[in-house]
Image (cartoon, rainbow, N blue to C red; front, side, top):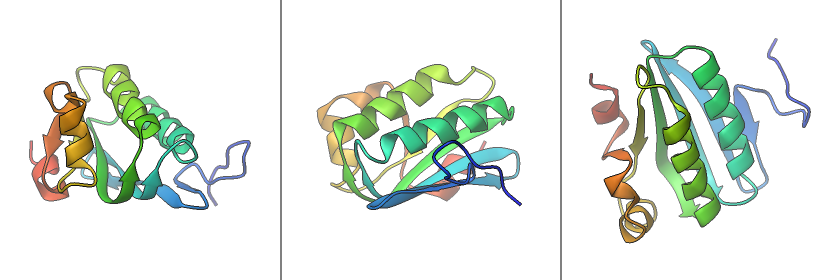
Length: 126
């Protein structure tokens, strides 16, 4: 029994043809696990779930890019939108490592704006 949005995606699990976004809870933190290509097709699903996690009053929002196979500008724009849309009481942390995810964030200097962590366990430490 899960809620569904107008596109018939479960609000806790939004899957696209090239990837998925899953919303999980970890001790008061909301974790969005992104899998596949975070591009123009998947970015709106990340936005919907990030907004939902924020509305739920989470203490911490983590976007885990560990299983991302391609990070497009549309995906990076959603990371910035999520960062700017979270209240100070629920900061955003991004899990990114390696050339597929971390390198684009470095080249665009988003590492200066976003809190980047090498692993999910590191991001969940308060």
